[in-house]
Length: 437
Image (cartoon, rainbow, N blue to C red; front, side, top):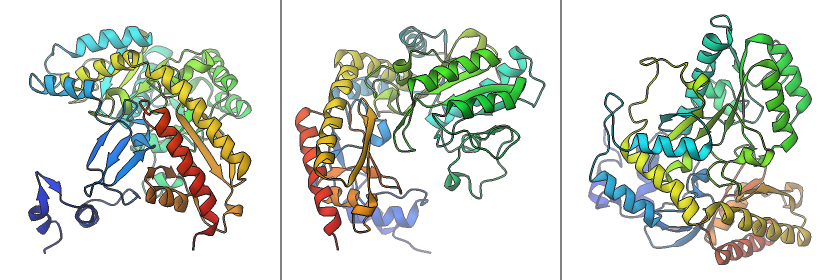
């Protein structure tokens, strides 16, 4: 049976769709439809600038959900990719390569851990950390076999694998994917009470209910997908203290907050804690190549015996080379400091708009991971999604949740001028939103 997937081959130029319309139609007809994407097709990009196949320009203030801290196609990372791709790309872990050990040494020293376990995606890193926590619980802590408990906080997003959605509270990610994995959840064990994020009392109850079977507690310093909810420093400090008290692992998911995004190298640095495991992904290679990892000390990662866990692309030389260069560029281009300074500019600009227009209800964030919440009772029924569509029509790319939370996370290479332009477009669109048809 024919479909648009057949004639699209004749409408390609150098294996690319010749127009936005062709790309959107072919994806609708031939791809799984598991994303609700805005109808914008990226054809070319540099830094925070994006162009579609027709040449229309956009400012990208989404940055692939923080996977593009270094911006699109950073020239230093492109050069590293090309150089390494011409030498060696993949060996699998059946053999060694000459790049991964160098990156492993560099990364463990930079982040202050003894070991690193490589993988390819953030979800794979989180899934790996769940496995490692259970293995540690049985081999080191002495939890009876198959009784280990792994807990998280409501609103978390650690991935979309079956174990990570078992840890989540988002019903859309869980519905019709059961049965979920037992003993992995964001509910107080033995009850239907959820473990609210940023709630120290709920955390204490959960740890007490889990008892000696508790293996680990997973937490994000900022819950990005929940709407950029910033954890109180005291909350993360309490989580650290409870893990120490109960001999459980504190696992900090830095996949969205890590590598400079919050104005610190890692998001948990704001609270002064040291997690037992740290998860990195998304921008680990500056958006150039899929790579992720788990960082931890010997006691934890050496509990995983050879042959009991693996990842074919984990630790591949191409990803390792780019990841190494991405961390170096972070320092060379002072991107952590930029995120801190420009984040203050973004929040100040949003609060200035808020003072003039009460449609903006709340402004929050750290570094260049920010959000504002619109009061949909003041918009004549128009939603955050409609606001994003309006901003898109003017050339600014942002994403909204269903509850009217607009997330702002541009690349860390964004310029002051681009931020001022974006704030101007946001202000203009906020004014226009109640008057839409």
